[in-house]
Length: 214
Image 1: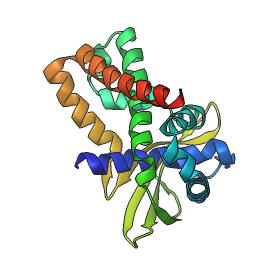
Image 2: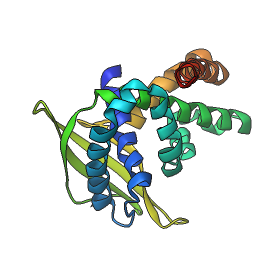
Image 3: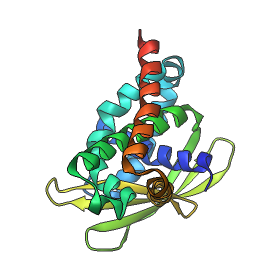
Image 4: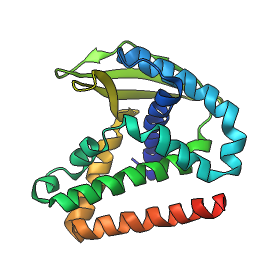
């Protein structure tokens, strides 16, 4: 998968969850949740596109406020780190989880305005392992192109809500691609160096956003 497709996957995933907080969509049924979130998202993008285009920092603020509370980033980070999670210190685990969350926001913010969706058609959820489902959907863009998108969700027993944790674009998993990419970097550079590089890229983005706000 090339980087453009990967970013589209990140965007599709985070755009779905971004509507969750703003629209207060019910999280009791995963397929209905994804459909409702998608519809809310299309409306929100059409309404706020001008503001988001003129002020990139507003996208970052939006993601921080409305997206991250609905993503188990620690769970995602554990999967992305794979076997390296078992040997990492608590400090490294925490640092990578934070850097990974910031990286998702950065990718989301860069790609948001490139998405021009006309409609999303969601199919009934299919059960997998206990407490997990997949939700297939077809995304139709304004130019007529159609993309198969499959969301993965799990049921959080503590909150009793369904949560999205991965998205597959045309059969390619976002998390699996991150795991492969970072796994290669971990082997070549070591965990601390990878985290340092992630933080450096995220700092540049934050500085640019701050300068826009100022």
